[in-house]
Amino acid sequence: MSENGTSRGISRRRLLGGAAAAAAPAAIGLSGLLGGRGPATESALANGAPAARGHAGHGEFPHATFAAGPSVDHRANGFHPTELLRDFDYGTTRRLASGRVVREWEIVAHDKEIEVAPGVKYEAWTYNGRVPGPTLRAREGELLRIRFVNASEHPHTMHFHGIHPALMDGMPGIGERRGGGQIERGEAFTYEFDATPFGLHLYHCHVAPLAAHIARGLYGAFIIDPKDGRPEADEMVMVMNGFDTNFDLANEVYAVNTVGFHYINEPIMVDRGGPVRIYLVNILEYDPLNSFHIHGNFFQHYPTGTSLQPSEFTDTIIQGQGQRGILELEFPFDGDYMFHAHVSEFAELGWTGFFRVGDPSRLSPAAAAAAYCELPWGGGKA
Ligand SMILES: [Cu+2]
Image 1: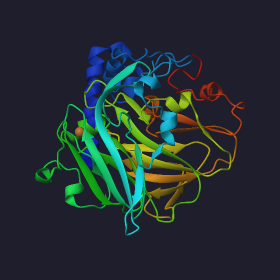
Image 2: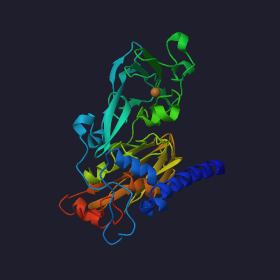
Image 3: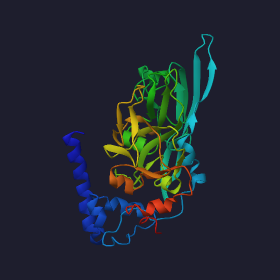
Image 4: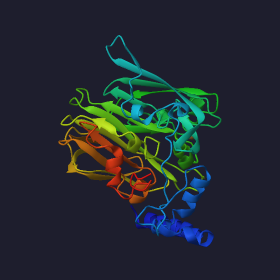
């Protein structure tokens, strides 16, 4: 991160912190320590989030996060973060006379209200009605065709990371005369390119204002498997995202796969000793960095997934926006293991979850949560 970027970030938060102090001196507490998240959080609460409250034993500092409450309405959202984890969209395939595989998808952009934390609604823009969009998965060397239909009220594109010609880049201003570039409401365009290089990539809208189009939910993971695949594992996709629910260019809710705290309410079930492979993508807007940390374990890290040799054995990685990596690990012991952003502020605003290994009766999430005093609803005592 540049020194410039750092100082800009701090001054934005100091500015917000100053506003908080002026508007609500009694509510500074933790929000002051958080560098000015206060007013944004207050606005999120005004938007319908459950009330923030203190934590027994640390009562003088109210926690500027979400209290316990009912889960979000996954049915109304039309997607479920637990199912979304292992939902890979392979499209449809056919073979050309040459023997080459053509893999095809249809992706439709829709505007849609979603619930990103209990009671917190957000006017999202979606690919195929979900945030993140479908995890598109192909194999190195195939020919890919993605027919994009814009049924949103706004112009959009699909910009893929990968190696492809300019016309297929989903960039406004490039290719309009050939039907591409910016795809207006009611228009459609088919992106076509080779699946290369193998690795973990992403796609997102590239229409300006870019941060707004991405932050609204127009993004997804894009996996190109190596020709010979990877070893068997329990595979899952985690897209680290956030939501600026009051449109003040700062996020109020942070998450993996959209719903804050979802994997606390429903820990991710994994087998003891079985290899787990996580496809981790950071698409967070308005914050320069995100991170992933796991408790009680270490993982092999393959940055961008473009090598079959890991570059690092660690328990924490940092990703800038658009960065991604593959994480491989095994859980040697039964129990509940927390994973979260190692930016504590993000963790307290939703980016926190658990892996549950082995016999689920051994530890309940409430028991595990009680051991962690910074949980949003006060250590599982609600
Ligand atoms: Cu867009």
